[in-house]
Image (cartoon, rainbow, N blue to C red; front, side):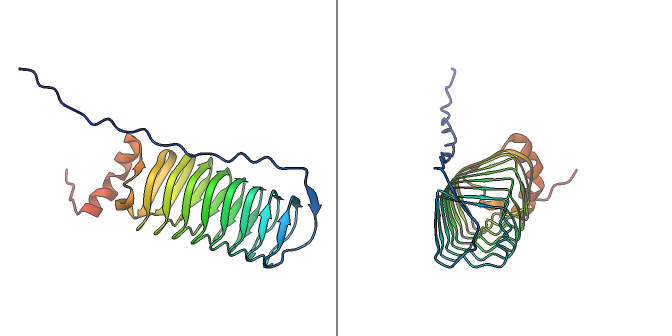
Length: 226
């Protein structure tokens, strides 16, 4: 007698909602940053903002283009409905910052501190980031597209509806992270250094599973012999 197996249908991965940034006509801005400053409808182009303090500042309907952000202090800053293009910086501090409806294009960043930050409806397209600290950050509806990300720290972070498309991810730490609808299938090269046990809630490809098999086996204490 034939039997029928009831297979639970897998729910599709919920895709990230991308921002729709439509900037108004912008006013050129050639000044510096101030703590708790209010920047509204401004075009910050080619500025060297290295070492300046914009902690707690608000950027609304702004464009930051080709700006230098070496050791710029932007803790608690808010970037709303804004575009960052070609920004570069080492040691930029964005701890506790908020990025909502933001597009970041071709950024080159190193050692940026985004721990405790909140990213919602953000697209990061192109560029390269090393030693990006996103510990305890909250990411919702975030897309990383065509990026090279090395030594990426998601320790204790919460990721919901996050997509990685045509990216390279190396030295990733997911320790203690919580993931929901995180799509890693578009990652060209995926190297997880720590926290592979936190991948519940992520979707990977069959090829990625095979690549991660040694890490998973080691984490589970499984010995593999020929």
